Image (cartoon, rainbow over all chains, first blue to last red; front, side, top):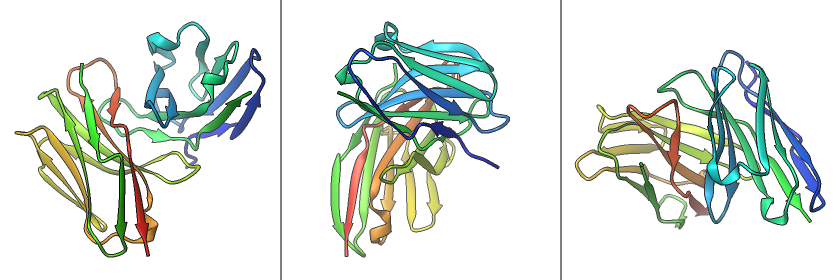
Length: 113
Length: 114
């Protein structure tokens, strides 16, 4: 069974560009999460979907970050416009309902110049 | 809301030594706990899932202890080897909170030297 897949693995953007990161959760999972990972802040929750419905949209990230889940097997995270401080690893995770562990993808390393 | 403090942020040990990572949480209603391992360039990999009813959990080469009285969760590697070098995260799932959110510790970078 395939795990969580994320594309691209690496992305380099100029300041002000729009970038879209993609995630495919584990087949059959109901919950999908987007996290940002930095050494200073650790793991920060950006968005959380349950059965494609947005459950949480991280307050500090609302203005330039938009996650969408158009079907149960695909999600995107759009950052518009990018800023150098957005340089980080973006992780996608999925799980099967409550009390279940989250399975993580390999992440996308974003560098904004 | 729930807060999780993880220490130490960095830990360096020799091969064969033990290594201990501790997480302290604040909400006494916390119910599910997790330890994840992250190797360079990879996502987080689940090491162990712990329920609040179980105080001692054994894995391959490690033990997870849950002290509900002190609200502490610890990961104890009994005889570390270089393959254990990674970043370790604890995570806490609140009972009764909406959805399936986990609160993560800041992570511990473990280096095991031969």
